[in-house]
Length: 227
Image (cartoon, rainbow, N blue to C red; front, side):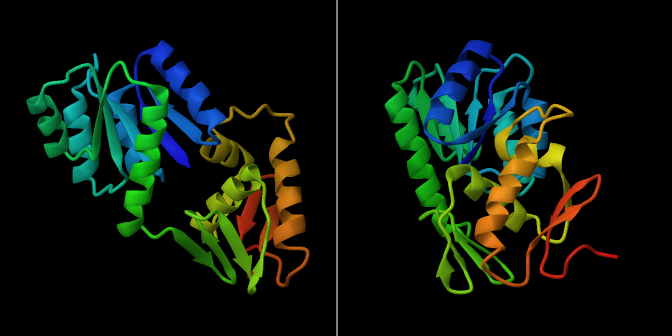
């Protein structure tokens, strides 16, 4: 699950990141409301966690702007305000759920999972391209009618490929969008993961779907590299 956290407090964001990564989630941080709106409207996430009390811009306005941009991703608001009127304001702004600080971490995870399950009715949980089918809820992959067993890292990488077919994806973009990594120039972490994914998703089948674009990155396409 890929989660956008819009939070300006480093202590809170660090705590959230440690816990979310432990659960196998991928977290992307936006420290300002404006950055959060930009990321939410130009990228794909499964859940958005939004801190209402912000120094730069009101969290309710951030939520409204995200919704007005047509983004349907579930939004969980975090706030120190516990009055019913405050909760209603958040829900009216477009939030799907509301969690009051301080909160138990187990409750946060439960709320996130509940929002993800609930979103199944509004956003397809099965992604397909060519002869590959991914069930995001069940975390299963099928190619040509055969199940493909992937690790969590391989599943996240394939999901990014399937969401972005026929596009050349740089190693830097893959590292950032899939795992929120700041990729060093000499790092081969992306190439290693792509190699293991190829052995499972490409080698037993035809045609190959993952193609190397020399000097740039990769493209996910049944037609190969565009000329």
